[in-house]
Length: 91
Image (cartoon, rainbow, N blue to C red; front, side):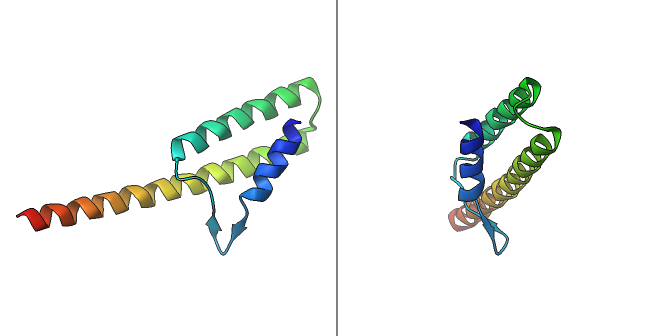
């Protein structure tokens, strides 16, 4: 079941033209990735996954985490820019 969820999430968050589509709630996404990493570790320790499979899944999740951190930085920069313009207008 966990494999089906992981495959589904991987296929749903396709990377095209260097864009990754995901929910705007970055904290929730990072929490979901941590959960999936725990599931991978548990499955590997039980023997349900080979080392190569676990490594591949962790690689995908690491990439997802990286792209989400980039997205979070863009959102943060956009908020700072808006606040700067708002401060300039009030002066």
